[in-house]
Image (cartoon, rainbow, N blue to C red; front, side):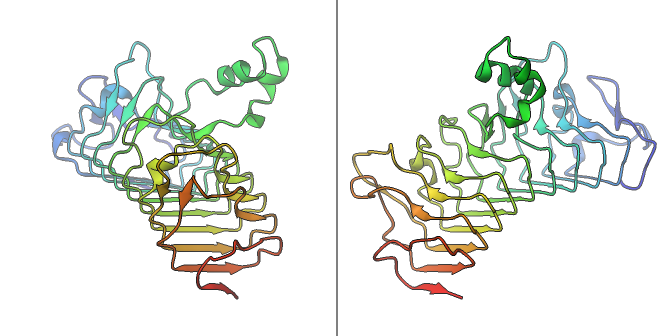
Length: 303
């Protein structure tokens, strides 16, 4: 579905949706791929009730929709958990007004999701982010006018405890101007356990990849980490408050760091008794003038 400047909604009806632009004879239970491109009047794609009508959905691609605010919109009285059981791939690209993937205030589960690519979404601050201003008020004080007007200054984790990704393997985040924190301190059980390849590009507000309270055990299977053009990044693993017994053995093999002018350290505290990187075989560094390479990192190459 593409190049439609006037379409304001895809579905009509609540429990038995049908595409407004297709014949009513389409069997939606058979849909495996949904691509939406250049639909400039759409503000959302689905609602929680509509998700259940697409049980076979495996691939979701949304591109160049100028006023899209959420893929799954908030719906009154819908508070049950959302499960998209067979969805394997999500691509969101060039969505200038997108705030979140799901704006519904409920737990969302993606048991089969393996690949997530999110690019050029400058307003996107969280994957699931209902009531951003209310969260800002909780952080800054309920009566704070500043909380209501400057909620964009609050560090809200992109991935919270309200989402479950037990099968996610590849994560790409690029050109997310509002992204300041990637992971919540607390995550849903088994979420990110299988994550193996992470790419973070052009996210100017990020100061760290893993914060002091991040549950690093969840990311022990990560094998590749690539960070490129994140102008505020200071440290990858902020482990100042981490103490763990037994030591977490990270399986990271390849680390690539490019054009990170403020990066000072890979980790910023003694890793003895905390984490180990015994499998790290290749580190590539370019354009990181402040970076101090930890002693013992193998095969460091500055290009």
